[in-house]
Amino acid sequence: MTNLDPTAEENAHIYVVAFKSEQYNFLKVGVTSRTVEARFKPVVYRQFDREVLLDLEAKAKDVVEIEKRVLELFSNDRYYISDGKAFKGCTELFKPQSKEAILSYIQSRIQSSSDE
Image (tube, rainbow, N blue to C red; front, side, top):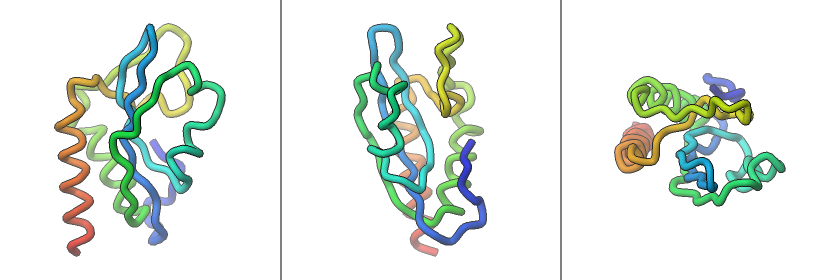
C-alpha cells in the first residue's frame, strides 16, 4: 500500500508499469506523489525492462482509493516474488494477463472521479 495521505486533496499519480526480465514478467500498480520515472529510478529496478502502460494524475484521495480497489478486485491475479528478491512495492504486482482489465478499470474510475 501507499504512503500517500488517503484524505489529501493534492494531486498524485496512479500508474501501471510492465516489468520484464529473464526471470520475471509482471505488472506493478501503484500511486506516487513523484513522477513515475523518479519512482523507478532506484538501482533495484534496473534489472528489469520497464514500460509505462498508464500514468494518470488525480487527487491523492482518489488514486489511493482506486489502488485499494484494484488490489481487492484483482486479488486472484496477484503475482508473487517468493525467491527472496522482493522489493519495496512488490505487494502490488499482477500477472500480465490481467493488463487490459486493470487498465480499463483504472481509466473508468479516474474518469468518474473527474466527473464529480
